[in-house]
Amino acid sequence: MGLRDRFNQMTGRTRYVVSRIFIHLRGQEIAPILGVLNQAGRNSIESEGDLEVTGEGLVEICQHLLQMNVYWESASNEGDVFWDEGEAGDFVNELFTDSAQRYLAETSGEILPDSEIPLTLPTTSNIVIMLTVAFTGENPDLEANLADREALEYGLKALINLHYQHKFEAIQVHFSPAQLGDELTNEQVLLNFPELIPL
Image 1 (cartoon, rainbow, N blue to C red):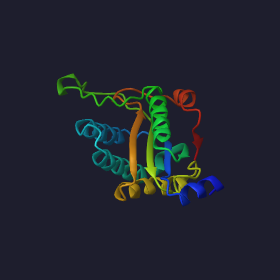
Image 2: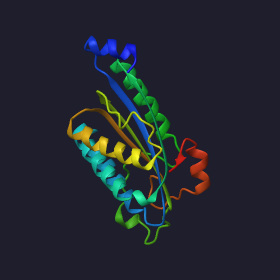
Image 3: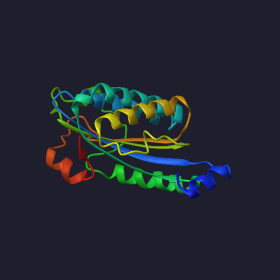
Image 4: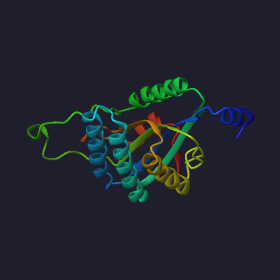
């Protein structure tokens, strides 16, 4: 902890951490997580972004990711520490905009009527999930480099714990491809997610 951090802590200021985690899953068996992601998105939209509901969705996503660790292909993370809530909020918005503009990524929560769902859909063998959170306090497991299997596991478990500790100020989930039937090729992963580091 730097001198400025110590001074801010001594004066009782709130420490905000904003973090974004990228996780790239690869394999023929990964499509079911799209259902988990879409359901969490729908629940969040229906609750008008209620942090408790969105947090429950994040917990479910993290639990599924932990169970699917054999499909983890690459990952990365970025973030910053703020002592001003407004600055932290601005950075969350910046990351939200960037995540939403990634290839085939959106959080519309649009649901197709059953009659419009084709009987067979191509399944993607690549999914990139972007988890953006803001929380108060410190969390070494999320403030470290997560481009390592063990570190990523600790990071996902830390997200689950933060929800139950009611530390979240913001939660956003984006993923590519966001629509069932869309495909994300290996080349598109490299072009649109250059920060990913092989695990």
